[in-house]
Length: 120
Image (tube, rainbow, N blue to C red):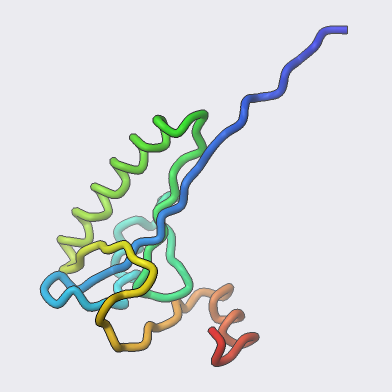
């Protein structure tokens, strides 16, 4: 009997980045125009709230491979955001924005809003 080893472990990364107004740096509900620039991309996705974009790496065999892919993706998304009057930010909570974020109107997120109500 011949031993056939399985494929080595793989790795992938998801970054959730805030969409900010270019001048004010307030959170901006800008996911829809951003997604219009990436209609078929498996790497640029919406999140539950419209002021967040999810940048997803390809599946790789090591972190160096993923690092290079993410650098290129984030550079591309940043350039697109600048063109749309937005900036990217990364933080758990925005330090000064006071507006409530809008939910992204996709079936999955609308169901979450319906099921959880105010908690969402």
